[in-house]
Image 1 (cartoon, rainbow, N blue to C red):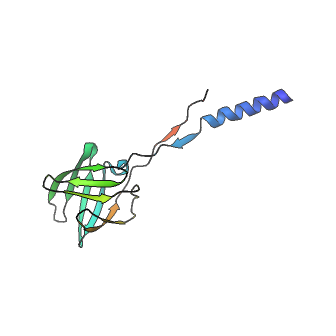
Image 2: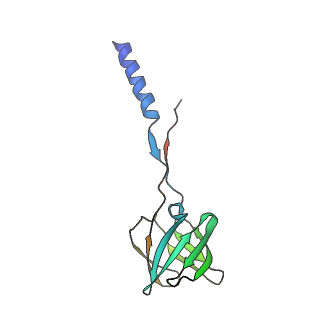
Image 3: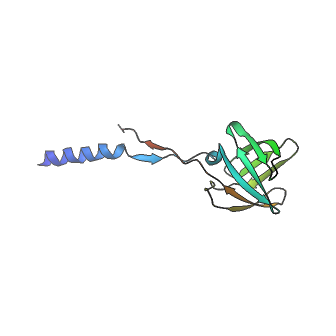
Length: 128
């Protein structure tokens, strides 16, 4: 009987070692390939955060400004070549959840992600 309990306990341990867990995304990864609506002074622009740090800022009348973007655990920055503006970035954006941020240029903007990338679930390997 003791042998049977040990076998069941060992089987339970093996089963738990392969459980799924979510890997956190690096800063800004939730918006790569996505767009965000940014409203400043009553004007809403759409910013597309492309792969490799490229960005496109599209105005309400369709004008496009090419830019680049970077993010750290503390700041999200856009650079148009003529100017750089940064906003506090302390947590990942959530789709449809507006966030009001004050930029380094003292402009208050409301950011709303249209969609976000989710962390990928990975299986933990066996432990030995």
